[in-house]
Image 1 (tube, rainbow, N blue to C red):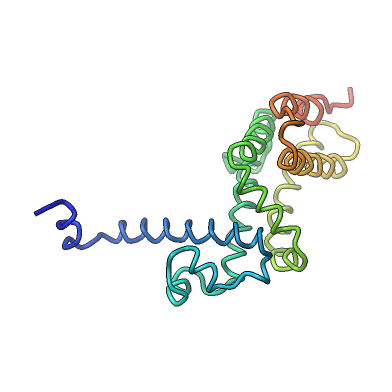
Image 2 (spheres, rainbow, N blue to C red; image 1 turned 60 degrees about the vertical axis):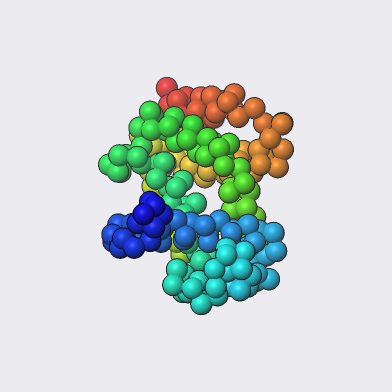
Length: 205
């Protein structure tokens, strides 16, 4: 009896089922992300996503209850990945070392997976999409802004909120401009400049 035959008759463990399910969910999200970005969220149907993912439309609903749920999962994944960089040890405090880590890893995320982030920003900019994720986005943003405001307050910055907003806008701008024209953005050099200007030279001494 071959290994393949043995695998067919041996029952899978709950852990194996969960792994297979997770891999299938990831594949569906990757397909949907590409279609949403290329054709637009509203123009993309569940049937089209299912066909591209190689499963039936009915089976799609075993993984995601609706197209909206699928899209929210995609965008929340990106938001959560970035939010986790702000407080890797979950102690509610942003240190200088963690600030450096945040800048390095945020930019590396864009460099290492430009396709995902290009499509991610493309979806987020589509009309009416932001309204669908506004609550989650605001929740993540509130936590991130608190860490940044506390960080700049501790360092004696005159306007901690303004500095935090400027830093966030600058990071978004760097990421988007790199995705549009990577040849013009030497990100290794830009990382150091961001850390120097926004992380380590903010005391009013």
